Image 1 (cartoon, rainbow, N blue to C red):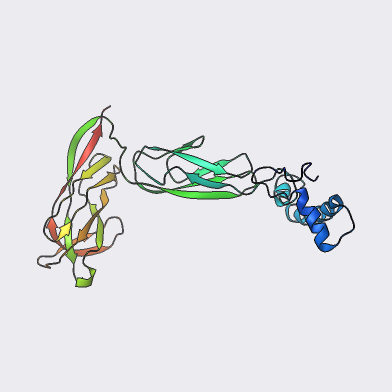
Image 2: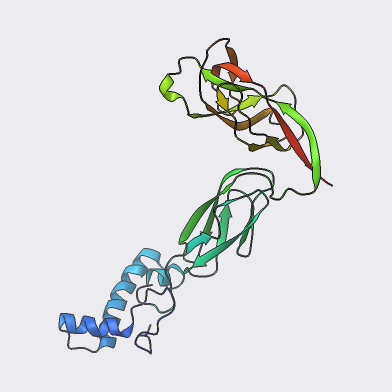
Length: 265
């Protein structure tokens, strides 16, 4: 343990107090000892507490001593160059502060160095977490919105027929304009891949342009989305949302096709 040799020369992000802090503290409390002796008094007091907590003089002990031990740093702060990307896209990551070495955890995708590559076969929110040597951590969420952009070389393939609905039993007029979504249960297992739904405005609804990834074997297509603009409540159809398991009665109004993009081998 020692005071920094230069008054304000402390490591970047460090929590160690520079020599000026101890000089000012000595004047503030009226101590007659030297700044170094005052530093050692606080250091040894904190050291006893840290040792009692961690039972060691290395690793976590020095992290506990970060207010006094030159070189220990604040916990890491993780950030990214963007927080919304396409599937398969590579996103740069940045770490400020923290004590090397770093380890990573993620709910999807691949981390290489300071880059995260989004999964090519899925979408949604993915958690990325960095943990430093002192077990301090920071995390972010990146949202994957669709297939690789631009699309890899390929061609359009088969289609999946789905239902879009204009409303449901018991819906009130005040709920119009709200977004609805569903997972459509399939009676067959189409090939896995990204499926494209073109934007359309059939009667009483608005269907936005969107991509949906279908995982082989799931027999559940979705979620896909639309906006309700009016309800008619004529003929009712029953269906179970295969994502939520909730049975619903709907008034079907549109039967769009979702077309699969097939990358070249």
